[in-house]
Amino acid sequence: MADQAFVTLATNDSYAKGAMVLGQSLRNHKTSKKLVAMIGPHVSDPCRAVLRRIYDEVRLVDVLDSGDTAHLAMLKRPDLGVTFTKLHCWSLTHYSKCVFMDADTLVVSNVDELFDREELSAAPDPGWPDCFNSGVFVFRPSKETHGKLLQYCTEHGSFDGGDQGVLNGFFNDWATKDISKHLPFIYNLGSIAMYTYAPAFKQFGSNAKVVHFLGAMKPWSYTYDTQTNTVRGDVHASSAHPSFLLNWWNTFKQQVLPMMQQEYGDKPFHSGCEAAPAQPPMSSMERKQKWEQGQADYLGVDSFDNIQKKLDAFLK
Ligand code: UDP
Ligand code: MN
Image: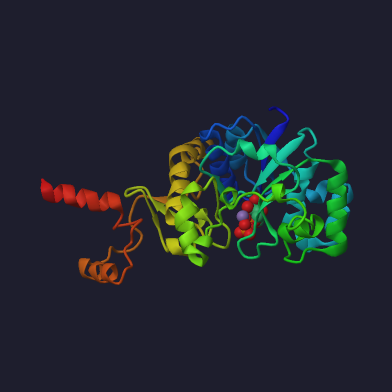
């Protein structure tokens, strides 16, 4: 439907890469909804151009030069900069219903059914399940709600300093009032669950529809080895399962990177993709030791593909 949209936000080029992969993943899973990227003034021109190729609408949102309530709210609470920007999604009143998704989420299945839900539907936060996680939520754009949210924000601030604190304070009956507003966890799988409740992750993790790379290590914090098609670095520092991280990078490399290369032309940019090995390869003795200690580098040198290649070579 033309008046329904997935909405994301990127205030810089790093999060813009996340938004590119997210938008592309929504397209890959054949969404019938519009795609909207809200961007801040610091997003570079080539990144904007790539976003425009993926998204139906790329909208510049800048609380600093919007001479209204948002600007005033911003003056009182400069600490909540990005949060105010995210709340701008309520001002997209040319849509009747939207699903907001953080730029560090990835869709692994069609999720258009989310539009059957009402405002404010969201999944529980893995760290504090009586709060919803604000990485994925269903909302109805409205000037009135937008104004009230900004006012709430200025008066009460945010208990966590970000949008999640504000939204949980504002929609404070989410935990108890209406179970239909609780999205299943598979719509916002922050797979720290993989470490905190491994058996459940084993049972349900493969049903994931939306993966959320929450926390400090984002997919774009890593480098990707284009020779071996593997993610380099400590993949376990990411809150998401290594296979989801690889999924993100495959989408980036195969579909997003070619667009970036076209838009940047001769200008240099950081893609995170590298062809040459960064560190000297481990000796086979060291590798054997690591392997025996249960630390197989199973996305890197010990990936299934590499093991199979080795076996094939032996068999020949
Ligand atoms: N965001 C942004 N620029 C920033 C920080 C955040 O555009 O500098 C947006 C982006 O859409 C991001 C969301 O705000 O996904 C929430 O931040 P983040 O995902 O880093 O928080 P987490 O999910 O790790 O708690
Ligand atoms: Mn996030």
